[in-house]
Structure formats: C-alpha cells, structure tokens
Length: 279
Image (tube, rainbow, N blue to C red; front, side):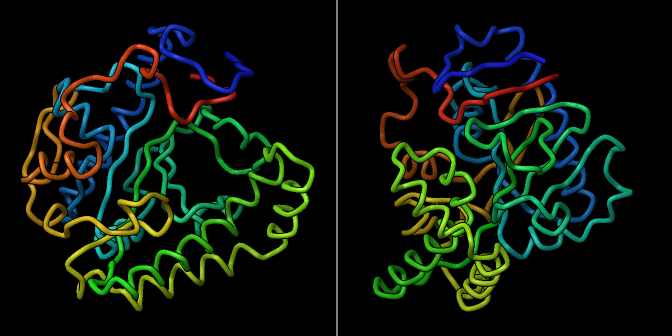
C-alpha cells in the first residue's frame, strides 16, 4: 500500500504512473456503469470535472483522480434495483442500503480488492475500494422561497452525516465537541429527511434539479433538467459517454465562461485528497 499523510498533494507528489493506474480502474467502472445503463434504458451524464475533462482534453483532467456521473432520481432509483448479479464479481455498488456503514446520500461504484480512502475518513468502516461517484438529482422548486427552504433542509441532512467526519477533523476542541453532539443523531434521520425532500420536490414536476447530497450554490439554485434529458455523447478516454446536448451551457454554469482555459500550475491539484490507497 502507498500511504500519504498530507493535506493536499499534486500530480507531481502522486506519481503520474500511480495516478494513471487509478484512473484506468475508474474507466473500467465507468464502462461497466455505461453498459448497464444502456442495457436498462437509463439516462445519465458524465458531469463536473469529468465532463470538463471530456470537453477540454478528451480524457481525464491530467491531475484529476475521480469520475462523476449524474442521473435524475427516477433513473437512479431504477439503477439501484439492478440485480447485483449483473455487476462484475469485483464490482460493488455502494449506497446506504448496501453498506450499513456508508454515510452519504449518493452512490459509489467500487472496485473490490483495491483501496482509496479520502483524507479524514480513515475511521469510517465502509467499503473503501477505488470508486466513481453516482449523484442522483432531485427537483428544485422555481419559487425562491421554496428553493431556499429546500436548500436549508438539504444542508441540515448533509451536516448530520458529515458530523461523522468533522468530529475527527475539526481543528478546534469546541468544533469537535459540537460535531460529536450532532453525530449522535442517527443516520436514518438524515436519510429520511433526504427521502422526504425527494418526494416533496419530485424531479418529474420540476424544471430544475439538484443533488441533495452535495453542497454548493449551483446545487441550491439547481441545474436545468434538460441537461439530463436532452443528451448526446462525447469522447472520453477513447469511448463515447453521455453528456448534456448543451454541455457548453452546463460547463459555463458550473465553471464560468473561461472553463476551457486550464488553471495556473499552482491550482492544478486534487481537490479531495486521499490519505491512503492500494491498487
């Protein structure tokens, strides 16, 4: 196992050969995910930095170490019902239902026999194989007041779950004590709140969608639902994967007008570093 104890590491600190080996495992997982979605008629898009990599590089952003895909809630729930026998023997689809120790509101497709542990999450007892993230998107209301209420409640549910990390990583004693108090709230409460939000703000009745399990202004305000229903393909790592037909609009919304310009070298670093991994 290769082990790192640092707050951030860049491509130079994590050898390109090791990073590429991790990316190749993730590409295998993405290809399997894509094949299952096509087989079952489910829509998805490669998203966030993965979509940016496809648009700007035709591949991973050189210093990126993860793959993100997004689905509307209806398609995500159908994906969750796919029989595990249809997955490769060394592939594990992780949700809070398939792994009782998993504390997040979105899924991961993991490669059994490997390890990729996010910094600060070493104490969590969940499956820790190399992964790709699968984010479900639920409805975001048009009315500003309702949108704000939804955002606050979604944040509350995330904080209840994030407390299991922050209780160890908070820099102050008071912070750790506070997060430990929040951690006493059962995970099922947060899962229940998120489920209620997905029902009250059904994506089928909304023009905009957002991920309850992920933070950010763009998530609170919501993404155009058409970015998930009007789709096409773009090349990524030598294969064709689904993206919004208006992928330029998606990327401008998330990254701004100059998204095709790479950041300066001092910002070309992994944003969610690993503390340990084995491939």
